[in-house]
Length: 140
Image (cartoon, rainbow, N blue to C red; front, side, top):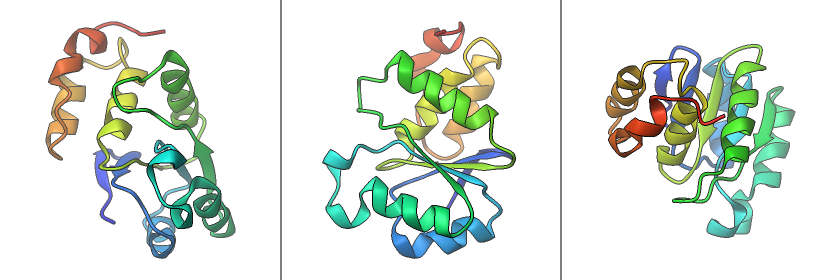
């Protein structure tokens, strides 16, 4: 697990495992967002299992499952709330980090320049260019 910092207070990552939780806490994150539906993964890394470890480590856990190709307004709103109400850096994960970067960017549409959002994700290999039009105006 290697956090991919899109901003100083928001990072994404591919799927995390129980052994990663201590490193996430040590890196200073206070909230972990799971953007991966349990239906994609084996039971040993389902959200409830990761949640228990995250909370035992003193961090908050938010479940916001995002289905690839079907990001909803509810997903965007939940991500925005989880990001803006955290009292410190936020760490989000999915299969590759891509969905976590997309929903992060869409949650900031209209507030942050689309070019900045696209460039931040591109530094880590995430292509948000197909979302340019949506990033230019709030989804709201």
